[in-house]
Amino acid sequence: MKAFFDPMQDGHIPRSYLSRGQMRTPLEIPERTGYILKGLEAVGIEVERPVDHGMREITRVHDFGYLRFLESAHRRWKQIPDDWGEEVMSNVFVRSPNSLRGILAESARYQADGSCPIGDKTWEAAYWSAQTALSAADELRKGAREAYAVCRPPGHHARYDAAGGFCYLNNAAIAAEALRERYPRIAILDPDVHHGQGIQELYYTRDDTLYISIHGDPTNFYPVVSGHDDERGEGAGYGYTINLPMPHGSPEETFFDRLATAMHSIKVFEPDLLIVTLGFDIYERDPQAKVAVSSAGFNRLAKTVGGVDAPMLVVQEGGYHLESLTENTKQFFSGLLAVR
Image 1: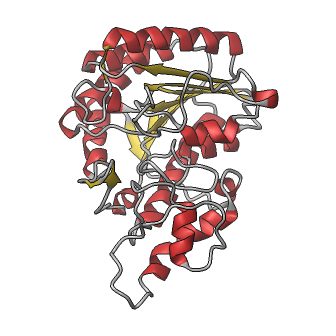
Image 2 (image 1 turned 90 degrees about the vertical axis):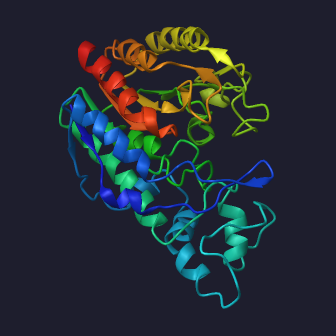
């Protein structure tokens, strides 16, 4: 099994983070990847630098105007002569009506919340995070049974045309569409503690992708406006979105009860490919956790999902308790290697 990561992904260093009426210390920081890479080294998984696939696969998933904004935002922001901050972050959030006149209006349209500031290296980092996912996808295209994309920044909150929740490009969806010709039926299992509204939005009307999210109840918890169990898809996609929220403060077994439900649905769907958007923020000591999954629980999670008879792409999402990331990485991938 191979993993992929590029050091340029850690050029994104957020300085600010607006959440629930306060400016907070950012959680999605470069140090995360160092701990994850140590965990991979401990279980003998080789890490390679990704190949540059360019923009075409990214434009299959994201709006072109949004991509132009991400690429140019910080450069244009710094051209303003007034006393503006070092990061692109609007104090206005208006998607429509919005004539997009000026960088502040574009920020109001394309940044969905206050948790996705754009610094001088953010675009480069997000770009290479997507290339990491595409290079891991290449491994499966070559015939590998599994691969791991150490994506940072993460991606499952990134919408078709908006950044949010620490996410800028939807790495899992970019990889899925790159693999669609080889693997027409794709299941995406999202056990990150937050609902991945970006993935849901992209596949909500489609029946070629089963999206299942296990997450903390989104009532007063990010992303707040999506992830409820009555959101099931629309049109041809009705039934192909499954949300399995957990009450806040749930014990570990609540998570595994939801996982059992998810696995039954995946079995019925019979995917050609399983994508797991791995979030270590379900860990019991994570500052974002609403469920108490133990380190050993990640081993159990991996052995469960590893039983699916299909190639598997693991795409990294959240996980913010730095001290546990190495051990939890070891637990997950040792479990996965044991059954694959």
